Amino acid sequence: MYDIAVIGGGPAGLSAAAQGRARGRSVLVVSGDIRDNPLYKTERIDNYLGFYNVTGARLLDQFRYHARRMGVEEKEGRVLNIMPMSGTFYLSIGSDMEQARAVVLATGVVRSAKYPGEEAHLGAGVSYCATCDGMLYRGKEIAVVGLTAGAPAEANWLREIGCKVTYVGPGQPDGLRPDILTVKAGKVEILGEQKVEGLRAGSAVIPCEGVFILRSSMAPTDLLPGLELEGNYLKVDRNMATNIPGVFAAGDCTGLPLQVSKAVGEGQVAGHRAAEYLEHLDQQV
Image (cartoon, rainbow, N blue to C red):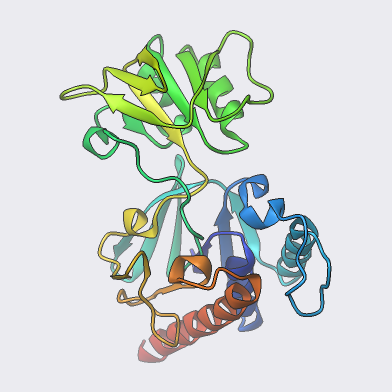
């Protein structure tokens, strides 16, 4: 079990993780492929103090190097849900499970809204995890909606285990197996009554029994139901604490401005307060 689990490997998450380690706590950072991070794709940054005219990729590499030198542990994957039970938070990460005593949400802004029919078909053909549910669809027609750099690899794996795969995405994917059909579309709709029966992608209708939607991250309120919002963002106090004890948040998910310096500062506070929260719990034992 870790003391602190940080969801998100951007500036806020890495800042929180480094601060947690500075307070002597074990810290795990869970994040998706670095290539999906918006900062990584930024060509020039001039307003982060000490790093004039730097690329986002270089800045993020420096943050990751710093966190690693501090002893922060990393795990690549998507957190599917967070379950609080008896003072412990259980994190479902693909087919794996991790435990932590406190959580920092640094998920950024989810840039892909839910698709029509997605919510209605959760558990009835819609999945967010290829390794979790792929075996259920061996020999069946499925659609993969790829929104991450790692999505083609997951689609390839689904094909390798025997699924009949159609890959849907806004652009041309790299590294996709030649026996996987591709459909270029930015908007999709999941079709079916009680269960998934197909996917509308642009002007095409793809018959399928399962739809795997592969986003870089999920909305925090989907990960942990009960979190309070303020507008479209997580509601936090000056300590970056949410309404759920032991859960803190930092960065773009807490609101404007969406700036690196703001994210780093909030991450520092969140990591500091998460460590203090654990110190308080330890004193009560």
